[in-house]
Every structure is written in C-alpha cells, then in structure tokens.
Image 1 (cartoon, rainbow, N blue to C red):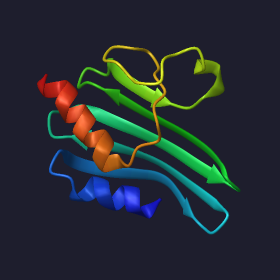
Image 2 (image 1 turned 45 degrees about the vertical axis):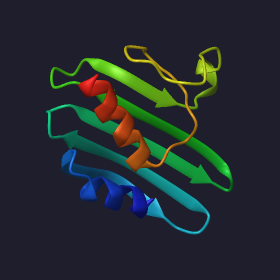
Image 3 (image 1 turned 90 degrees about the vertical axis):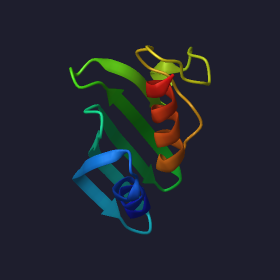
Length: 111
C-alpha cells in the first residue's frame, strides 16, 4: 500500500496527501487516505486486502465537496456497468494503480 502513497506524492496533479490509516503487512494490507489535487478537488482512497480478498473505493469530489465519480467493487453496486462515467454516484471498475486513476481524473477534468 505504500506504493500507492508514493505514487500520489510523486504525481504533479497532487498538491497534498493525508494518510489516515496504513497497514502494509504480509497478510493484511489497508490504506485509507485523502489526496488533494491541484485544482482543489479531493480523491478519497480506501483499499484493503486480507488473505486474498480485496475491497476498494475511490471517491473523487470537487472543491465544493460534490461527487464527481466513485469507483468501487462493493457487491451492493453489482448492477452497474463495469466502466465508470462522470457524474455517477458509484461505478465499479477494474482495480487501477493510482497513476492510471489520476490520468483518468485529469482527463475527465479537462474534457
């Protein structure tokens, strides 16, 4: 999980990273953090892996705290399409590395 934090800190799109919780052990991995982008929007990251079971949610909101998009693999969102679209309340996607996710965020912001 530390690789995600490091990728965020290296990204020119990120102004600040706040790690709320980090466990990076052999059988338990968990990351909860918040990344402020240079445009004032915020990406909330919550990712866990415990003995092969992975859960993630990435929640991106604008500077006024309005939802832009959310990616997650929660089972209660199984009815949604596999690719996220702007403005959805929740959208699962293939688990992405943060650098890929940041490219997607920047592309959506710039149109």
